[in-house]
Image (cartoon, rainbow, N blue to C red; front, side):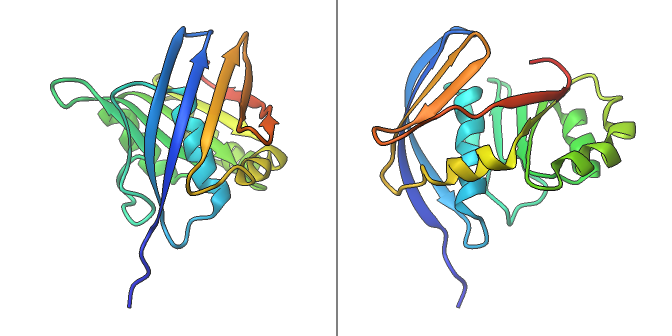
Length: 180
């Protein structure tokens, strides 16, 4: 018998003064049985940073050829493709050919090694941006995972805060490649 995804209902309030973008989102996030709270919350962070009415979660870990998050225009063309973690270099190149903008939100103990191994090829992609989130910050995000979370995200002058009534975290994103 196959295990089913766990559904998280997350109310996310975004106040991004840098873009400027303000909105409240009722997210339904499916956490694949093999996905950690850490990875799921990094996906939620990626949503918060690029929040938009058109931004959607992909079908998940079992669908390798699809973005973790994506936004399409009215014609169905992909405006934004977001992957979290350490995606396969071949898939990033393929995404760059399909989307206007590709973002990789890199995290984990081997994030530095992933970029060092991939930068020769990926740094040629003009529409790619790579961010790195420290292991400590990604692990701290996991503490926010609740099936009925009510989260706030504030972005101001390049600073980021994400949290709930119990804790407000200040994860730091390093721009490894591309524009912020």
